Amino acid sequence: MNNSSDSIYWSELHCSKDALTDTYGWFMQFLLAVLAFTCLIGKRFCEPRYARRPWLIWFYDTSKQGLGALIIHAANVWLSPHLTGNPCTWYIVNFMLDSTLGLLIIWAGIRLAQYYARAYDIPLINFGEYGKPPMFAAWICQCILYAALATFAKSILALVLRLPPVVAVLSKLRLSPVSNARLELAVVMLIIPFFVNILIFWVTDNFLMYHPRGVSSKIKTRVRYQSIKKEKSGSEEDEHSADERLLGASV
Image 1 (cartoon, helix red, strand yellow):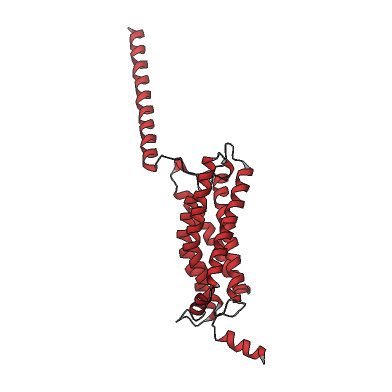
Image 2 (cartoon, one colour):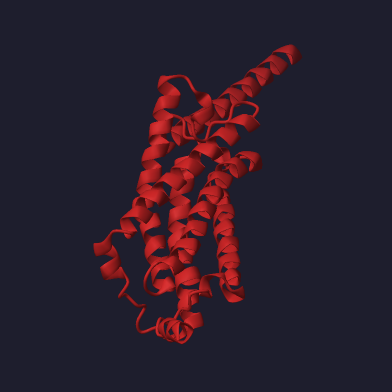
């Protein structure tokens, strides 16, 4: 009797209890990961040539974000079926909270770590800086710290979603008018996350990459242009003086 009532209950929710972890669900997750990774590659090529990160530094920066995203995504996939209501609805609610409040918590943690790194001379936890040559130890320390920040942010939001008033409201939500189970899963695990991730991954990568303090991009561009101009004028003066010496020798 309980089994039949459970099946009727889940059939009414559009998205089944195991929909996030069946073959179709894993395929949606894999496709989203590939698209998100491609977005980060495209961002690297959008950077100015003189400021473009080497591939190793780019990997160090983006792998931290990938690790944090993996932790949060795994938590969402595990939590959503264990909450009362539609698992797909709970997944997208978790995802949107992680992309807003969660990102804010992580940003505050990154800024706090950078402050302590400079105040107490702890370069290993200064996000985006790995030394010259880049040190593997710095990358590992920053990965551990970023994973801890992602776990902390996810834990805070998971506790909020367990509050009875929040559960009472969100458990009744449904992604109307989407009634097809596979379409609903594609919407919550691929379509919406893809467009949100384009923005979130781009912004988070800017948090994690190295920015020289006190120098804006416009100033750096102006200084670079002036240095090129001086080099050109200096080379022209050298050529002019060389021509004068040649004419003097011939006379």
